[in-house]
Amino acid sequence: MESKAAVLTLSALAQDTRLAIFRLLVTAGPAGLVVGRIGETLGVAPATLSFHLKELTHAGLITARQESRFIHYSANYAAMNELLAFLTENCCGGMPCGVASTVQANGACC
Image (cartoon, rainbow, N blue to C red; front, side):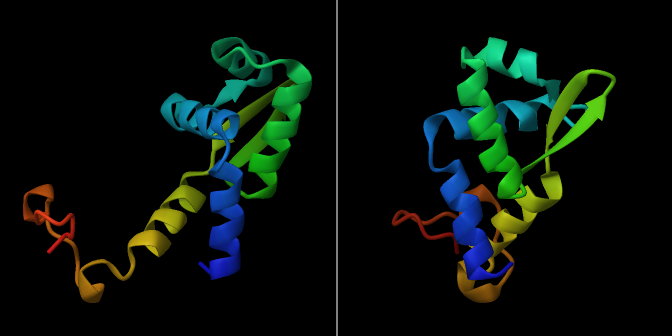
């Protein structure tokens, strides 16, 4: 992942409602959720929800698919994993990170 793509992705998540939407869709699994269920669950108005879904889609974090008259949104797990890999690629000097028990007192993981 390029730095510019990481910044775009992180900026899409740097807002309370968008982060909540993304986390909800990650929890929902590959089937995703219809727009109405997302708004209902999070208490977000339709116009506001539409704006946030567009931002997350633009960042590549979620995908939309039309089924009949419903739009289902789901998390893009590949994009999420790519971002996580980018954020951790230099952890531990490029060596694979150990388990949580190897976290040092200063928070470093090695």
